[in-house]
Length: 319
Image 1 (cartoon, one colour):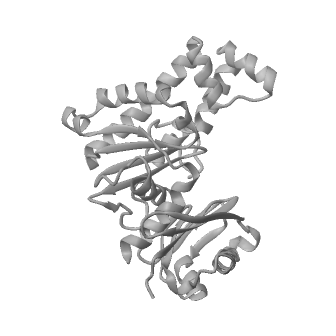
Image 2: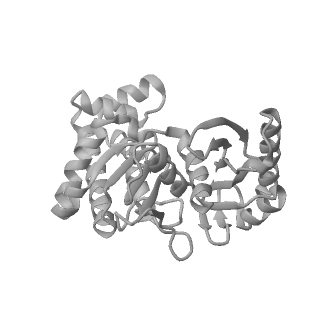
């Protein structure tokens, strides 16, 4: 029987996204289940496989048609073994995800970091358009990164390749969830931008943002971009700093990997050209002209589906 189906899985701290996708990239079905965090997430693999079995049965599809499972998981992953070294928000430590899922399913299982998987998906069916060299950046609660070099994800010696969110950009900066200070994500994530905006308000600055906070009880990155567009000088200065730091960091990474595309995703990317244009200016200022000539900046297209497409593509790559 032809193995013409791929199963993509994107494990998050709240939900697990699953999809059945054809070898050609056609989305046949997608669904979510809650991430079971009880007992350090030990039942997550069982929950995933039961839901896949139920979906296959519901669609009258046989397991024998499936080439395998491709899984994106948060935290530090060892792709060769499929072991999750640590995933704090689920409770996993030295968790043999690949082995467990293979035993449950009887199928080949491939595991990588969720940001890497999202990069694969965006390159396969999103705005990457299958370039051989690409840098994907997700600006959300944190900052995720995925590097594709010569068509392959860069995972590194023990799974920390592409973790650009943890490049130190401020030597004595804000505390990061990784336990260090001044990581890129403390400055350029949605969380980092809001933190800096709150600091401005506490200093008696950014009156436009203060008014929004007084009205709504909180502020978001959307508020910062909107007040900057309306002419608030403190919001504009904050974004100028954020995008200068991000452009500098991406320029440094780009000199190392020489990407044809830099794909920006995550909630902050909804700002569109208000983000891209100053980011490109910063990038051009700091990188080699020849590196810049080869590189195009684009906004990610797949949104929450990037991970499941990437998981499916990981199976396709290894089949």
